[in-house]
Length: 113
Length: 107
Image (cartoon, rainbow over all chains, first blue to last red):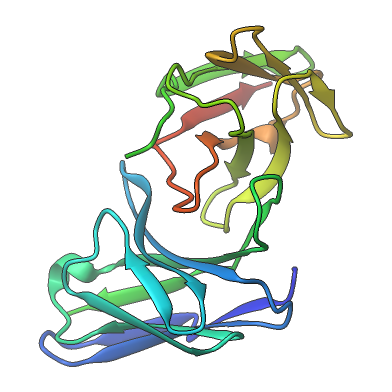
């Protein structure tokens, strides 16, 4: 499983509450990614990181923030969760370079009620 | 901002070869083509990648045209377990996925 774990695996939260999802890796890979997946939309990139404290936005970053204070952890925060953020969230890791595969976590199913 | 175009769906008979096309007409010289698949609600799984030569591994073959503007993933003997969404992506640091092709293998 390439040493990547997501927590929690399932969460139900109320609208307006803050939520933080964690992606943890044991591989020391430089690149880490957060995606959301909704029916009919495939995987959409939220944010990614190319090193400690180095992050950038993806295509659906509104309403989300990220932090990476250590190589092994990439946190995704929903400051004030909305029902439209109900989704399955995937984290991925990848070593630097154009000839390297990515490894994905098992996903976090988040429901905002 | 995926750089690839794939058909939304395709069917395949069990035991037959499945040929999955992908267009990547804006690919640049040093960008690799990668294929992943996602079975049900699991995280995507790497299948194969290539730059300009054809590639084969235990899962699939990848054929890239000489101009590199398109490629085909070949599953040589599709099984029911190959039913999945298949993603073709051109690597950049953002690792952007498109909607992929939903492949249904029928008995």
